[in-house]
Image 1: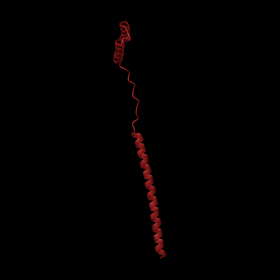
Image 2: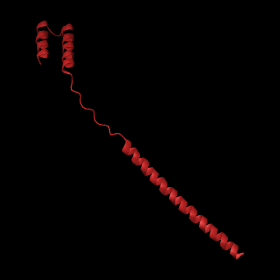
Image 3: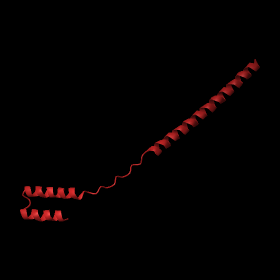
Image 4: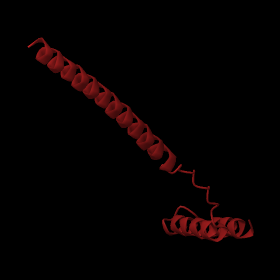
Amino acid sequence: MPGLLRGIARTAVVAGTATAVSNRVSRRQAGRWARREEERYYDDEPVEAEPEPVAPDPVSTKLGQLRQLGELKTQGLLTDAEFEVEKSKILNS
């Protein structure tokens, strides 16, 4: 019977060691995969560049100013003379 117990004990030690090693390998692999996923996430993430400022179109700016000037004249806030002076300033700028 002592030989049987020794064989069972040896089998238990070998199985326990194998389980411990297997678990350790699994944890290490999971850690590596997690790091790779994290690196891939940060490497593939596009860096958003700031949009370049768009210069206002001088024609559309002048048209907008002329429209506002026309609205002021329509509302009666500008006289015909003031309207003409401001209009010439806008067109000559």
